[in-house]
Image (cartoon, rainbow over all chains, first blue to last red; front, side, top):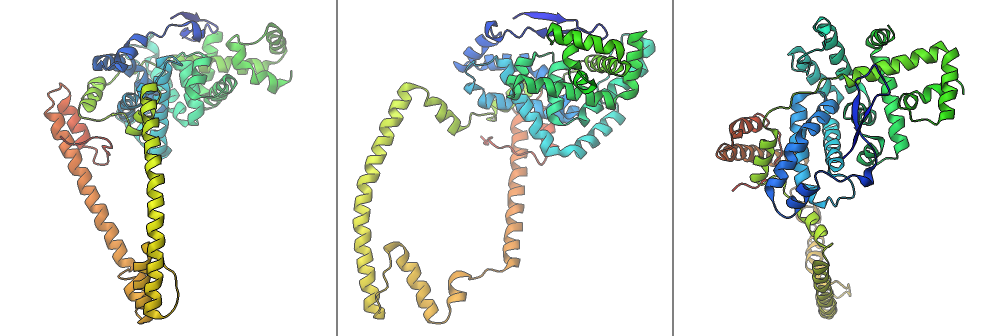
Length: 219
Length: 228
């Protein structure tokens, strides 16, 4: 697998994004998937260990609550076990995992409804359960940074699910357009448009933090 | 390019995802338009905020919990799906095709026999009714019994009570619904308790916490788990 550091934006943290030369890439999970399909249960356990973190991260960004994200991660991994034998290697296995995880998160989101998700989010914020940086880069900015991150997390929850999923996969997970298109089963142009609309919606919602941030970048 | 066209392409501009010509046009516009230039800065700042979100801590034991649930029978491959997958195997497909052909042959030959029987029954039923009522009302063998009973009861003036709507009242239907729902609820809770009990006995390091997790969620549906 090959990666490149995308440094188009000096202000943003560079993000390791896989170069989207899909057909030339050897799937790093291929051997484990082959062993699992051949009946080796420990190979599936190894796949779970490899993918539980990104699945949980995606579920948390989609649902906003750690408790819901943990439940959905388990459900998604069980679903992977249930349906994963149908995976025939037409895409990378990680793409398949993301698709299963995204569907699980969207289904849970529909079941919960927005209001309940917001109530949970509020309760978690009040109890300090939301993820805040464990070691801020500049201790002097710790409080402001934590506040901004909590607000970004909240603003993500306010986006329509299709926009949120696209921007989470691109800007947080660092996936290339082509792979996101395969996860969402939409054309690349739609992916780009959703990412741009999501960023603009976040820009509006995070107005005060964005202004501070852009002034900091300019100075 | 006007302002809205420029703004629609700012993400692509930041991603260096535009042709040289398109990029030059936007550069030229940004030189003279402070509003679009500010929007570009804000977009860049938004991306920066997003990418600085911290990596969330992974709750411990997710993988173990999933493997424990699989060991207890959850996450099984759906049977229909498994069948469809196996049809991709040419040997299985050949067997399936042979089986279907056999079934088709039996149905065909069975149909012929049944048709004969039915026509005989229709004939005898018709004869029976003709004999009983003196009127030729053809009935099939399948419908004959029920229809005859209903007709008889109607003849005796008891049709609406003894036949179609016997015993039905909205209150009775509601009671039936409530007791059915209560029975299903009790069964579901008992399943969760049994599931938690088996989890505790599974001996996995996370068994106890996982069992508590399920006991605290009485609405969980264990769709494809079967008690041992």
